[in-house]
Image (cartoon, rainbow, N blue to C red):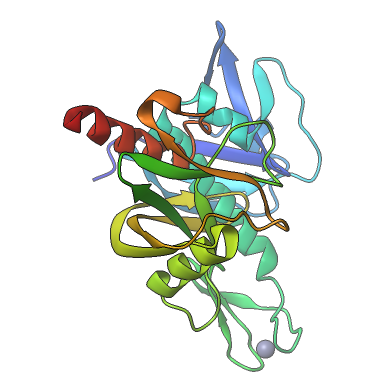
Length: 261
Ligand SMILES: [Zn+2]
C-alpha cells in the first residue's frame, strides 16, 4: 500500500539525472515542485521505491536551479543508495522506450498508448513493448583460477568477464558457449546461473553464469579482446566497478575461493 503522498521525481536531461544537493548529500527530489514539472511534456509512472510512487520525465533543455545538480546516470551509482540508483535506471529505461516507441517501426504511423508499458500502432496493430537487449556474462573457472579479459572497448585498465549480446534464435546456454569460444577460444561446461542485473545504458539486461573450463588453448580474439588470462585470488588484476555484474560475480568467486583454501 502506498502510504506517502509524495513521489520520487526522476527528471532526466539526456542521460543526466536531476539530484537535490543538501549539505554535500545527494538525493532524488520528493516533492512535485513547479520548477520540476513546468518543462515536462509528458510524465510517466515508473514503479515504486520505498513504498513511494516513482514518476519520470525528460526535459529538452537543462533547468538550472539552486540546490539541484545534473549528474550522469552512471556516476549516480556512487551518490545514491543502490536501490534508488536502480529505480533511476528503471525510469531511464522507461523513458528510452517512450521515446523509441512514438512511431511504429513497421509502418511509421504515430503510435497510441496501449498499456502502461506498451504503445500500439493504430494502423497495423503492432504492440511495442520496451526493447531490452539481453547480454550473457560468463565466469570461467579452471582449478583455483578464473578467466578475466580486458575488452578493447573498456575505459580504464580494469579486467572483466566474457560477455556478449544474445542473438536472435539463440538460447542463453548457446550464447554463453559461443561468446567464450569467440572471445577466448575455450570450451566450457557445467553452466550454472548466478544472477541477472538490469543495465540501463540505455536499456539492457545482463544475465550472469558460472562455468568450468572444458578444453581449448587460450587465445584472445584480436578484434574484441586486448588481453585474456587466468588469475588466482592472490594475483587478481584491477577489478571492474562495483556497479557491474562482473564485479559481483568476481567478488562471489573470490569469497568462495577464500573459504576453500
Ligand atoms: Zn504499424
